[in-house]
Length: 211
Image: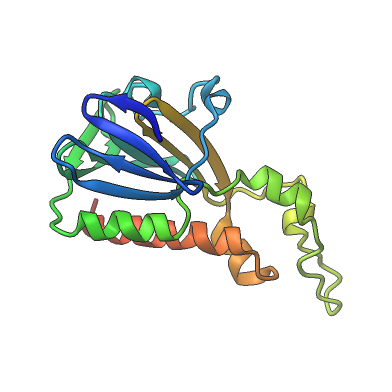
């Protein structure tokens, strides 16, 4: 069943999964796909990185990973597809109110996308829903009477925060994870944190040193 068509891109529903097909009949398997335009109602607070809202993207498929690190360090990775994949790394230019877009030249982006789909890039929940559903005391060492509450706590001690946005045809969504690496290292196994950490590790590994 054809769900939508946008500049040659067709979104095909196949037993609850989606395929994206371009005019050259090349199919992109998207796996389980969630769309929720309400998650984009408020603009992404991307600090000094200047990009148009993802809902205005003209690409057939676009995935953005925005990273905020401690001490106000920002960057963004953008993966886009039209007739082929391309990738850019975005970072603020020092002392100037502008953003530098650097193309990352890769010949394996088809494989990269396949790994993202395997890790449920289009269907992971926001970490707020994980905290509510799986709220637990992660670690409480008795020796020094300190407690680390992780998912059960409303307190965030800085760290790394990530927002992932995507747009496929007319569908778009955004979700957030705070300190997923920490949750993975010190908390009980939660599949969603592991999958999102896999996504982070993969995308960040594609950025050349020094960027």
